[in-house]
Length: 299
Length: 91
Image (cartoon, rainbow over all chains, first blue to last red; front, side, top):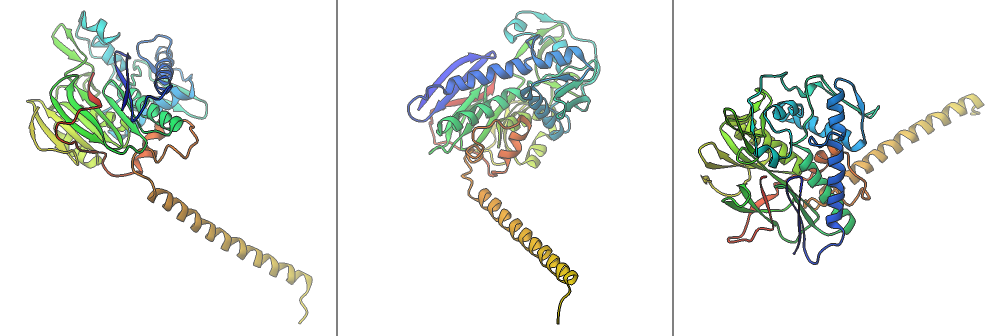
């Protein structure tokens, strides 16, 4: 088994393949990440989505990659009844997360005044004209989908290029592609190096969303990066961490994010969606959902 | 009985139309069979959808639906004391 690991997007990136290292596999992932960064990063003033945000409500020409990523984010919103909303960019920035998390952690943010409510239905994706727009007062933030989509696409590109099974992990978003002889072994935890369990992954993707990471101080306590679109504030419901398996990593991350917004109804909704999940409830109890292996236990 | 040229032309047109219809039905059946076979022979490993598109990039919002057709859960019990190869956690 060969593993290549590096740091990017403020997180760990890992490419794992059976057998000897694949020269160039990491390069494929790096190149894609750079393309996605240029297209939709919230922390680059020259990214395409930041240009869309700045020019709102104009409908702005964008690349096929940016247009597709925005469309995927809108699809995630539609599939979760708006629980995962790509227009929370202004809200998460207002709560203080407007720069790299390392910078944000070193300062104290003010609690924001309520702004316009997020509304994914006010995003325009015009495929014919290759343009994207968002309503004035809202800002696009593809944080719930872009990283996971990148893991999916990177895995797909590597297996297409080399015809070897591969696992790609980007900051805890895990995608696999190709026919591996054995399930991939993945550590599931709330935070890096935290307590958890190891599961086997045969295909699809795994993603974890948690209130336990990407936290910072505000004038009224701490905040985190997962915004409830209904309130415009960080989630504070019955589920503090959700790990989800789905046929793709972007679906997994969509549902893991939605689970924190759904709170008490997350288990029922995830069952209906047909995904497998591991929920950590507010008090620390771990609850397997669907075909997730294992029993109820403490985190 | 002699058939006048106009009647002969109409008869041939009807036969041609019937032939086209039969060919279309047969073709649809064949395509359905090919599609069913392609779905049934997927290996369910996540690689089934990757080999047939020649490395072309899938549209980001079409990626999920394409792979969702594989079905079956992909998370299973790991052997005791397994050493993980990757990790999923909030970062």
